[in-house]
Length: 322
Image (cartoon, one colour):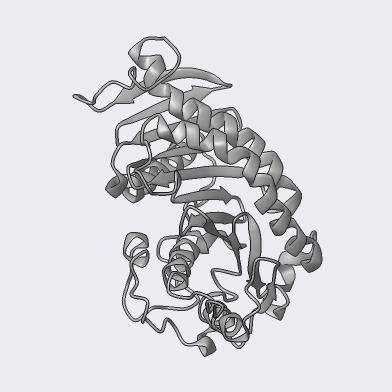
């Protein structure tokens, strides 16, 4: 972890930084002392989360309490301890993003439970929770990004007999074999326990989206928001996020400039009180949006979506004959 900042009611209280870290002053656009410079990426992230929280609120899954933004060079973490109290953390190492995320989740929980006597909101999910489609061996999120393309994945039957509904958008190639390969991937990864929705986009246009929202096991999740409204809401969310990506990218690039030829962002996690929304970029033109509605399964759904993203890189439509 490079540094950690604490905020109360929008005011920076203090910054704790790693000794010997290079200054951010050469990268930030605003003149200030080292404390202000160091807090700037996190401050910008937390400002973005206010708008993102408003974007997510109509989905009825609670308040946004944790945001993770990362690329191969580093990451930002922003989270709510309680209304009015926030933390932000920076790392300038892509390999340390998961460790920083886990450490900040534990810190928020300790402050809530030991200082404020508030319940644990399980930021990042319940680590011991069993996944819906268990891989043959434990797999980390980082390892999941590099699952071989020939990996068959979990069997479709492991999804509790809930077959995902898969719809195709205007970016899908008119290729029945390609569509069937996509359906097979969704059957292997989308399930009623952890990853309940996944949408695939190319050039900001929907290729396909699939979910198990019609499964009887998920009925209690749709008391306040109907299945149809939720499907529409997540598609609308993909469009709503576009306006925030420039601001998020600018905040991240203050501490982790993108590598040449790579997407400016690799992943975005929006952790709410009842689940999470994830965005994973498979290339500069393509990304996946994933959703879990179960807070205990936030970590498992994150891993699941990254496994789907890795498998998806090996599926391409047939090229038209010349």
